[in-house]
Image (cartoon, helix red, strand yellow):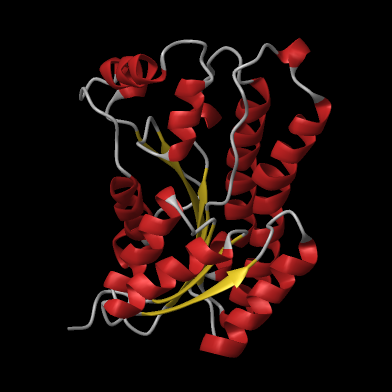
Length: 257
């Protein structure tokens, strides 16, 4: 049976693991043709294999979102392969260590901004060029609750995710009358390798730190990558046709406390 995205083409950056992987699979389950990118070819091809085993259609392109030529080539290959680009989920990102700002290494700060901010900027730039030619398209960027509030020791990460919100809102205004919607999803504590690394780097026992994070959520648990994926698909769907320039928080009620 055809899904709600039958005949559509979706692009997922950072699609080799976690939220990106779950979203690529979710798009395919709704009959979209999926292009996913990342720097880890084996993991990317594994996601493609999973999608194809269930009757879906997917292609992996190795790309570093901080490199303009990689992004240009990804969009070019997407159009050559599938003819259009309907949805883009700009999800590629990295985290930072829990360290006071004055101890943060400059090279780590530059790397984080290159991927989390420059990567979103470049991805949107070339996605929008294609979507303008089509006269339609939807973009969802991965920000975070860290793009709306702050925790100690994560200044560079917060700076990057707040920047994603700025890019999202301004670009949404630029193209609102041209058939292109742009929003952000803001995950809370989600069970991913990134959260596990943050817990391990917190200076506490990793399992205890992870449990503490879960206990801080009003719903009493971490979220799942699949729950974020379903939110991304909603924002891309016709059910969200009047939503643009917004941040959709998915955090189990954390920011309501």
